[in-house]
Image 1 (tube, one colour):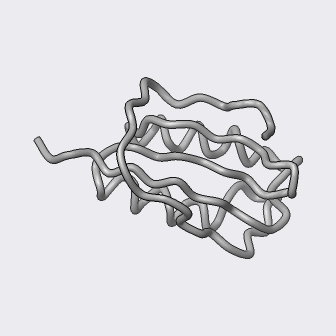
Image 2 (tube, rainbow, N blue to C red):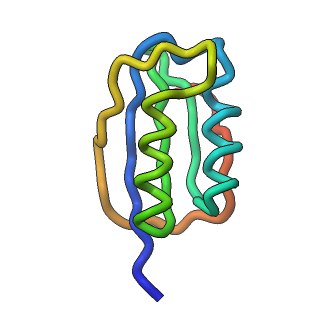
Length: 94
């Protein structure tokens, strides 16, 4: 079995108050990813995705679109590495 890929991303644009965290959690679970998502006080959304590389890439593409009410202007990979996650959770704003 391949080593899971772990990415930390920041999503910018009109991404709060539009169901972005629920959209992210639903898609991550559908793709079999683990990790978390949360709003940031600066108006962005931050997430960590861990799982098969192909599923992580699909999730990044879905993040660039977001839910229907979102307007995504940027998806930035801010870290890549390792972690140990179980499930996919929505975390409190940081």
